[in-house]
Image (cartoon, rainbow, N blue to C red; front, side, top):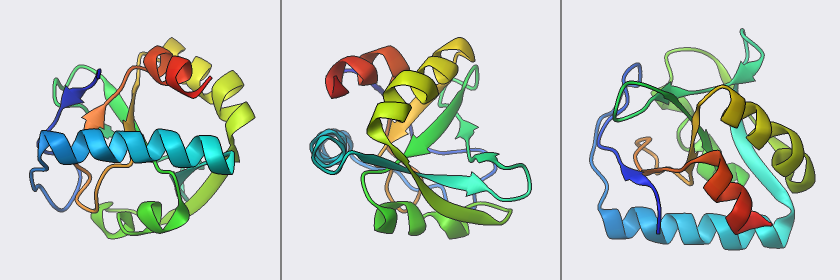
Length: 132
């Protein structure tokens, strides 16, 4: 399974590690639930009107976390130093528009990051293949 293990996020309030096996299991849950529900959840930076993102473990790219349900997204809201709102996007639009944009911007995806914003960093192309 692809992805890069990360330990912390700059600009976030909590920096706790997550085991690789937990991160892989969360990725599988993300894939299964998103395919089943047809929706992907994210946190919106209310002021910027743009999805929240964090630094990657390599500090060379940014990562946008996405979740398989609203409760997963909402549990991370307190870790951002600005106002956020949980929102969803239909899977079809996520696949056609969002992932293409993130690919162009050379950003990564954080699927089902835990409440401390820890988890895998996945390339948008890989995620597109897994969800198609």
